[in-house]
Every structure is written in C-alpha cells, then in structure tokens.
Image 1 (cartoon, rainbow, N blue to C red):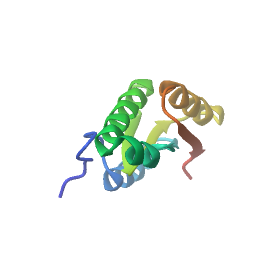
Image 2: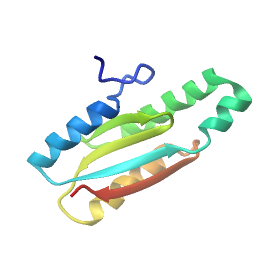
Image 3: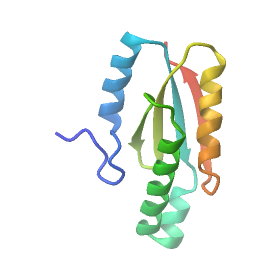
Amino acid sequence: MSMSDFLTGLGDDGAFREALAAARRRYEVAVVLVEVTDLAAINAVAGRQAGDRALLGVAAALTSALRCGDELFRVGGGDFAAIVAVTEAGEADHAAERLRAAAPGARVSVAAGRAL
C-alpha cells in the first residue's frame, strides 16, 4: 500500500500520522496546516489540470520554505500538513508565516499549533 500522494509525491495522510507519532516520541513538534482555499474554483473554472498545476506549485513552494528536518504531507484534496520541530512557543507561528509567505500567488489558509 502506497504512503505517498500520487500527484505531488509527498507523503499522504497515513504517512503523516505515522511521522507525527514518531516525531512526538523524539522531540516537541508543531503541526502547520495549509489549505489551498481556491482549489475548487480553479478546478471549476480552468479544469482539473490547472488545479493539479496549482497544487504542484504550492507543494514545491511549501517544501522550499521548510527547514531541514521538517516534513510536508498532502493530507487531502487541497490540504497540506507540515511537521516542524519546535523548542519554544513562537516557533509554530514563525513556521506558519514562512509557509504563508512561500505561496504568495495562491490563496491559502494557514493554521499552526503544537502537538500535545
């Protein structure tokens, strides 16, 4: 059974859950959720191929904004989750801002929180 997303090559929801469980055993982590909010509109107006190109672009932009050791997953249609190591409270918010800034041409919603 594959644990990667067929379009982006990123880990999928199952891989995310496994990586999160493993990471939480080693260090404190935060999860940053990113949703491409206009994916349905892109698909409806320009077609699925345009939506796929948008997802690929967002995936590449988000990946480039992560620090070494942080991980990105595609956990649903237009939803991505990043696992980031944190040592202090503000790091999750900083990671969220880096990811939001990484995809300026896409309409994205970003939320961050520490994994308990």
